[in-house]
Length: 358
Image (tube, rainbow, N blue to C red):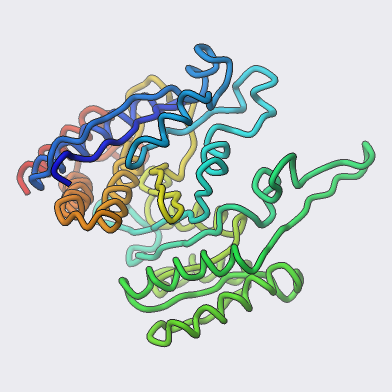
């Protein structure tokens, strides 16, 4: 792209104002090293800052501006700390996901040198259906999938549709083709026979269109145990919303820390980089937050945009950004969560320097 990418940066809450600028700085260094035109960044308010300015955690001016950029990186939100009615409303991340139909949540879990991983050979990707399942904020078009007919009875709906499963399964199988050629479907069809049974069956049907990809399936409880015991044996895991959320947090910790766990939310035409971890308000403002997950999420966004636009330099920038992070950690520059003493700024400087060395 001769004019360069136009990306939005939404800092969010908690440690967001620390890790999002760190990711921006690292992405700029990687883009320059790859010979890309400079990335044009648009800062947009989200979360508490947006509430203060617009009276909404995800205000319409921000959402409208996202329509006009190539992609964006979203910092974590701390909706539990918002005043009512904002605390009870759909959070800003959910609002964006629904607005842009970001149905695919891609969450890699890869151990690398210096991260003190529980499973040192882990290198898998969890492909999570992002619009349905058990989560109440995603299982209905309007309102919520969780309700109380009486004060003593609470009911939650699990929604699974063929169309939604087909499109996430195709994402998983296509991704497996570019990796090690294996997909593991995770469900609980022995108990939730209709809902997760449909998920399993449709995934297998889609797999018929990918005869070069091996496919197997596991119950969610068994997969949790397998990740601990032999997590290095899996390639791509395809599962529904809540199962994917739980497994990706587990896999992230097994790979070293949630602080190194990236994530990409995408549709066919839009993508949002968003670290898997939360806003960590207990360490916000202390300068010790680990920006690795935000940086690696940004690399995922660059690679997704490279595929969409046929931009080899953006793919090169993504690879340089990932390599820079790994090199900094391997050389001993680590934040507190990885057993080190580096501040957010010191770690970012080490990543930028590693990118510069190429």
